[in-house]
Length: 292
Image 1 (cartoon, helix red, strand yellow):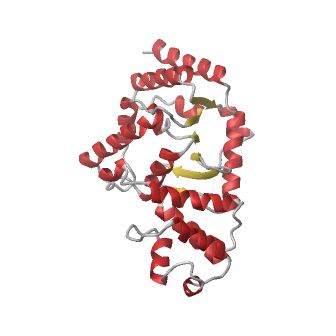
Image 2 (cartoon, helix red, strand yellow):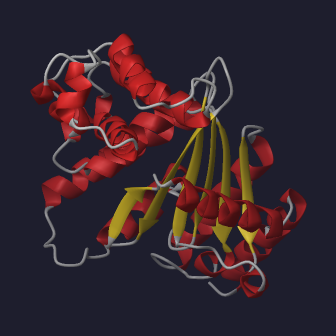
Image 3 (cartoon, rainbow, N blue to C red):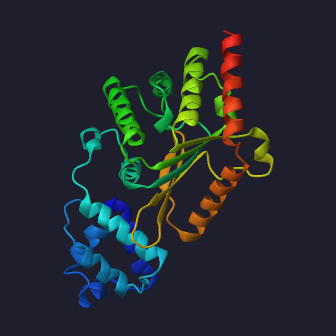
């Protein structure tokens, strides 16, 4: 989260053409070294909410803008957070994914599209093990790291078990639900779990994105997640994208953010309804049972 905050501040400073010395000279921060550590997401630099507010004012970011609220929300998340639970697994939690865990823990709404695997928050243990059994490009298997990754995913799934969980919408591509990933029994169990969650959890909304919809609304990427954070004024939104075995990143540039949001909205609009999704899942379960 510090990295995301720093990147946003650097972007705003650059947009108005100010140097580090300019920022120090204006009294927004005490030294160029401190400014550099903040912008680079350093964990060893202390700052206050007032520091960030002074910088945003100097960078001419309007207080009533979404950009201002977004930066201040990130700053508050950094200031309010103690050492997170995934710190114990930092060796297997990449920076971008660590930020995702951080933002998820504070989000009031999460909407995700997944085209490769069932979303991690909804994976059964057997399906998760099948996913982790797939070799990562360029990496050798490490039993210790795999077990840590399992622990992280299981702990992450507790997000939807909280007393006040976020509203979670998962749009899952039809094609991945037709792949017997991990074998027919594993996939049948996973489909049954998705059916149960879709039918019984009011705060979890599962929708299938049908194959024919690709002709009118192809997703921009194989996995994208929009997170909405609670604020006293307005809503701060953050968007995370992934490509399996390749990269994960936060979409920061406003034009690209709007493009991805539009793509995600289009995917959601063309997804099956809840009733249609339940019928699809039941048909897939029956198909796997009949052919076992």
